[in-house]
Length: 79
Image (cartoon, rainbow, N blue to C red; front, side, top):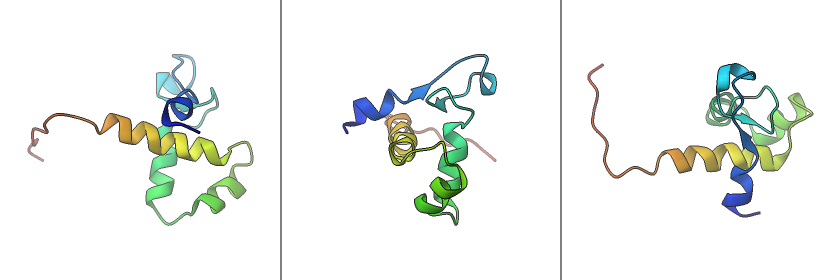
């Protein structure tokens, strides 16, 4: 599946999760899935815990994160 097709799995609806980008209109924000993937959970563990998710949903979350990181420059912000 191409990145373009994967990104079609990302939906934004003001009535779901306060308009955050989610997977297929479900209440799984992309940021939540990226946090799980960047933590100690494997994709297999996530899919076992959240049975309505599919492998391509996790790939879509990663593709969306990659898409957002495509910037020309980054300006550091003081902590």
